[in-house]
Length: 263
Image 1: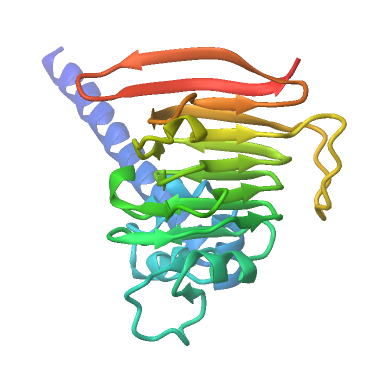
Image 2: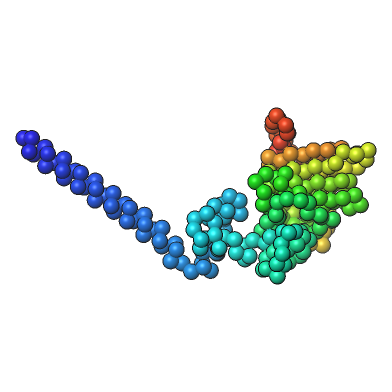
């Protein structure tokens, strides 16, 4: 009887060992299948990933994925300290990067220092992302004398950025669907701070904007964003109203979630 039990246990152990080997071989073969694709196919797949964190994480897999995930076809970079400005996809300032960008491009703005912006019009669907670990490390600065740092006339997204305005507004929303996530919008405190406002939206159903992109769903969505200074956090006109406001008080900051949409 003991011999029979021992024989059964050995058979069970051999079966489990065979299953383990098969699962390992299948996982290895499946992981190798995607690497059999050429560079163009892989870059096309990477283009559907969100820049942060998914596309960023793909760059950590291997040297080939690092090269493809950081390819100029997928990113445009703004780097004030870049020595070789002839490198594809690298620009000395934000304005030239926006002009060169194609609809759907992602612009990665380098951390450190101030990136000056004066009434930069964004008329195409773009994504602007700060390259630092925190939004405070990448600052877009608008000095006195300009209406806004960025004038948004199309659907776009801003993430992990600090936009600071000395006088006026940080973001002037004209049309399109704008998403602001994990940012800092800051108006400097001064005697004329009643003229300052982090977000100004003039979009309305009656407003006609000469933009190549037609947007039927104008509005602003704000997620996990610090808003500091100014007379009001948001100033709207037309038929846009502030909706679904949520505020979380942290030890040193106040974070906002809200939407600015048509009634």
